Image (tube, rainbow, N blue to C red; front, side, top):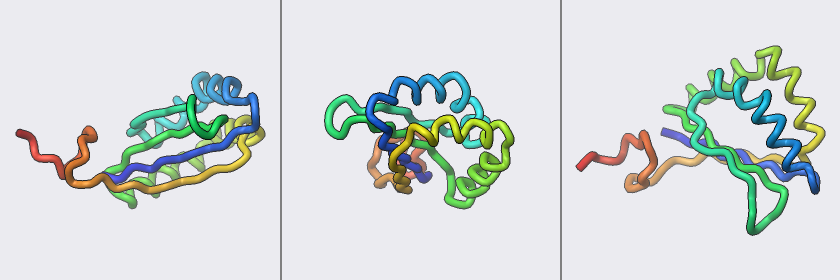
Amino acid sequence: MFYEMRTYRLKTGTVPAYLKLVEEEGIAIQSAHLGGLAGYFSTEIGPQNEIVHIWAYPSLDERERRRAALIRDERWLAFIPKIQALIETMETKILRPAPFSPLPGNPLIKEV
């Protein structure tokens, strides 16, 4: 299992508008293609105006296939400009859980 952690730094004051757009339009489109949403967060302490979302994939090839399908979806292409105007920076990390990580679906965890 691999986890993709996407961190967006938003323009000051735009977190509520961003979250509203994602909740009302974006998350349904993303979930239809990506599945595996592990979490969607906004910061309270630390760097402000940040959004972090984490997606789970069984393999990097599956991640590539799902993201390619997403970027071909006309609904996604119409949605993207709405949130791009609110984003200052974006960062993506691919994370691999340690063998002892208690994440759901971690194939490395042995059931007791």
